[in-house]
Image (cartoon, rainbow, N blue to C red):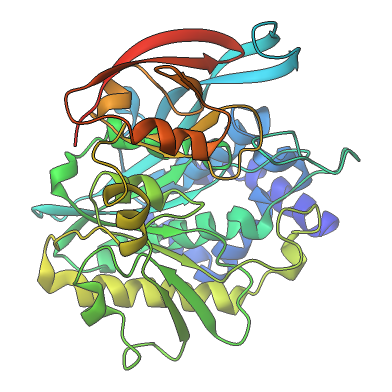
Length: 422
């Protein structure tokens, strides 16, 4: 991989003039297969050092993605007429001590989503997304600890593969069904709590009520035996007509109804937007330095892209489909409590308190000022040692009740008051 990826990087930076051109006929010089392999190989090269959120490698990746979006003819939908949508991010470099006696060394910085738009002057828009960040050298994150060897986690499958698929689909946006406009979004911060996707739904360049549905491409590069896993098939009744055994496109489709998972589609589900996550699944090299480009199944990625195009075509007559909350969400949240704070806990967090994975916009936690990544330490008079104590605490309240919340952010404790709602 090393020689090949070095050549790809040389090609990238020796071709900057090509990327800046607005003549779309330049695209004919490379096949989709060559384009896909080039994008994935560059993103998964050692020179990007694992694309850790807000790192130089992540900025290089964002630069490549926006160059591709520009040459493909997409319109920028980021900040101030650019392709980049910046979101705040606090990097915790070091923590010492325990609760009440914690000292931290933090860096206030920002990550970037990359957003391109193709308009068909349609009423509704489809978001096609893929996260481009990864975990650098295996830095410590929420429950994620690197090998300590300093090796680079290139993340060829996770998720250079999804970004490559998303971009090649964007390359041919004009050929996609005219029933929708298309927002192609490369999210950052997925590995640290859906940071970029969460910011996006709060600051979407398209009103959320105009978003028909979301398709998330995450880890699509290791197909085995023609198997494709599709999460989120329970998020709209439309999917039972679209995703069928008869229309499998020669793939073995494994359907998963849940709209909640360890990827960015979860955030869209939580704001009542039907969302699918297409993935070829985990494998031996998942979250290891060995997730390299030599192991990518290129034909498998192409099959995922073709299936994505089929979904868009089959969904076109439905316009904006109705949303349904999946059963496991009802069991975990709606049926269990009279009230909710409007957040998704991090079920993989093993430290003290309850770590907030996602704060749902305009719900109790959001109105109280809680943010993604905060750690809830106490609700009212109940100390939150784990998720079970959180369940106990929430169960005490009814709609309209207030409670003081003690929480930690970047190692510093804060208090706020939340008003519970149904």
